[in-house]
Length: 351
Image 1 (cartoon, rainbow, N blue to C red):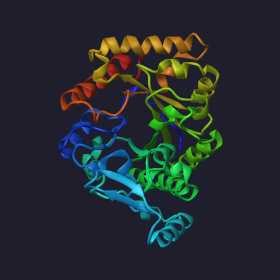
Image 2: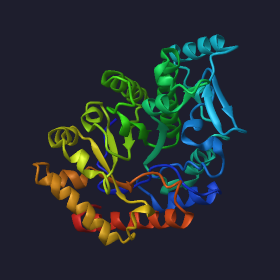
Image 3: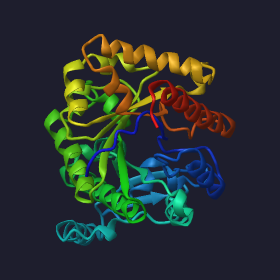
């Protein structure tokens, strides 16, 4: 699929604090006309929490609502479930990995609303799936051991998230000309620490498998990490979009100008998480945010990266999901993003 440039269009990371999905979906479509994203609503239902949301149908998955816990069990019935799982992977039975309405109401309303928009329907849409590394490191077995450290369950996590990502891409492509599916990888912030005993090669292999699954559906593949990580690892994967916290953690990514330049020159898109969370104490003034964006882009330009390319191959987003914010702050964040995008577009001459 040919990558669009996006030209500093506004978009979203995924999660929201809202409880009522349809009015939110309608507002997203009305404000984000270039790249709307379906909303995750963990406040509406615990099943929409990012690690629970994509566990549906995976072998051994136990969703304990009463305890508010998800874990994997290799007890009775697991071997039969595992066999059926791998048969579906081998046969590319993508529908076997669907995310149900109870687990993602915002997604299903988004998919149902989009065809009704008629001539105003956006050409591109965005979705998100928990990344395989974060899923394997955060979700545990019955003994509270991360799935990453049990080979059988680690493979379920890796293959499962890849197939969930492929299913997501397929659904979005059914209702839109183009789709971007982003792997949400917050645990990459811990990669390389003494607390993570997973090799670089294994992380790259897991990410590559998910990216390839998305590409099989002729969709773009992105990755979101809202903190410092080894960006050389991320930039070594064939991603189309990299979404990062550009407000608080820009310096980490700026350490790799050669890799960033190569990423952009092959058509990659930097998704700037330039609108910070409320805990930062920063006022959501679009001109203040524009100054922050210009400062960071200026630093990359000083390292030899083409200025026009940086603005042209850019998206603008919140620094992270908005689920922990108030509804009012989330709404203000959306307004600030749209206004910021307009300021950039007017100045840079983007249509």
